[in-house]
Image 1 (cartoon, helix red, strand yellow):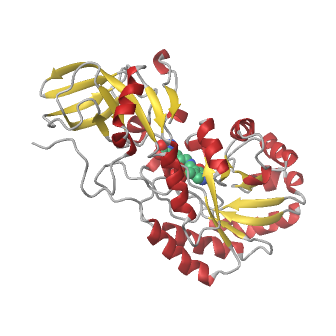
Image 2: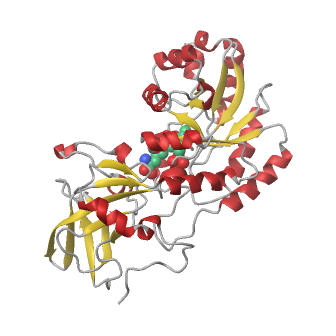
Image 3: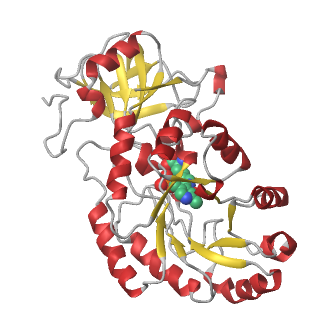
Length: 387
Ligand code: LLP
């Protein structure tokens, strides 16, 4: 029989195991909560800062827009990638002294007003279709713009999160580049950056080097491009025994490409990498049952709080924190309280014998957790606590 314990291949136990007593105390006060540890975010930032080939890091704030995290990231000189006026306005509200030059605005199939709005506010915009240049060229006259291109191959942890290739709605395809060049010229816009984001949760470290090579080909068609924005997508493993993302391999691959392309800055815009591990979803065991030969452990929240398992089959480690260290005596499905069969956080998980009110940790929930939550079934999403 195995035990729930720290896996030897991991460099150090997760922060929520090191701070177990504190987490149990927090859980005492509420049925459910998202808990974020700022120190873990700081460490992720530092790892990206140590990369030799990256000149600028922008945080894709769609992953988590908790004000404390945004303020911390701003204070650590991380800049921001936003996808809607709502995100930009929220950011400027919670970090009021943020210089607008630290924001990159990357809307997708957005209405004309969004482009006018960003021009009037003086925020750097990225176009990812020909349409805005065809239909509203006057908005971009004399403006510095970024262009998002489709590098041809999508990557990521699930079909829904691949954002390049024939089956994705994002980016200007390479076969439209001639037309793009003439539209930019007609509009009188000034292309200063070329961008791509090929997907989310990418484990292969060479992906960004390949993207950089593709982007440089397109950048060469414009006179003033100084930036290749290689997007986000850096993978964060869900299982405790998986290898961490190989940042050094990514850096080395990029360094080789950069040596051939000395004129360009390389930017990265990760969301998940900066915040996923920093967050857990805390809940409690509500009810237990057996049906057929299956055990069910019910918990006090559901897919309204964290939709990733239902939507992408995403794997989140689930630990009974109250009984951490007990033998993993049974195999159970961990299910939520929402009225859908898909409301399952984990299938066939080895768990200790669990009891009502035990504290359950759903790990790696700092990215795309609370931000994708809803009031489905009129269950309120959990509150957020920052430590
Ligand atoms: N840049 C752009 C233009 C993006 O669209 C995204 C994410 C990122 C950067 C950041 O990607 P990241 O480093 O976080 O992988 N809800 C899904 C992920 C959707 C990502 C959407 N775009 C999930 O929970 O896995």
